[in-house]
Image: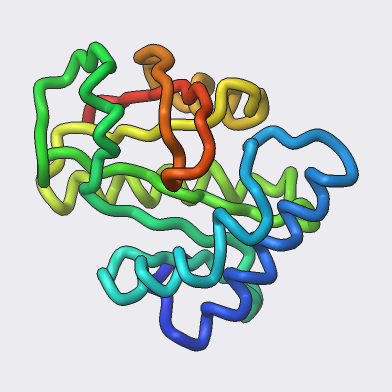
Length: 172
């Protein structure tokens, strides 16, 4: 089940972020995220306050979190999108996180399908998102789910990290 997150879910969101970051520190850093910088409990809290924080539960345990909103980073202006859409016509997937302990169960696919359905209900014309150019699992997932690789642009992520992010788009 996917639902809007509550304040009671913030601790679990932080646990998920830390599990991902700790796992990447021990293996491969696919996301280029930095512990203590992004993602943090504060990012989840801001999404909660904005009403855009979503959680996936299975058997009463939160197994995934995401921020689903209409905020396109300024760097998206550098991308050649094929779906003409702006503002509320675009649903953006931010910080879709499934902890490594829950990997391989199809949760990310279910969360993306939920985001697409949410976008349709909200009258959006498309879904857009970005991921670090080295995030091979995410790139593979979005490609398999029919997202178009819209290109790469240089981001000043969280005003702290310069990185190249690959952008994706899917028409709704």
